[in-house]
Image (cartoon, rainbow, N blue to C red; front, side):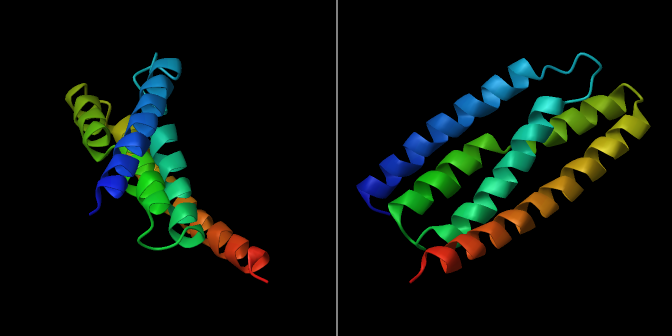
Length: 126
């Protein structure tokens, strides 16, 4: 990894982490449902699918968008912790719904991102 690529990942990580922090604050779970993390993970899945197909493989821009921005925006650890907390509070239905919604919406968003990225590549290629 070049120094420029490393800096691109760091810059993207700063922006993605800041956006996730903002989302989890603005979409604070007043009823215990972690909306902010759900929105961050689904948006990050869409963005990563799009970036993966729309940006050149191995480029610093893809490193910035993918590993940096999307990697910091999405969070497996917070998703897991939120599930454990819901289960500890005996909110089994909410935990199951959160898990299914997160995984289902994340997979659909990633697939949509891949389709959009492919469409963009084909549309912009002469």
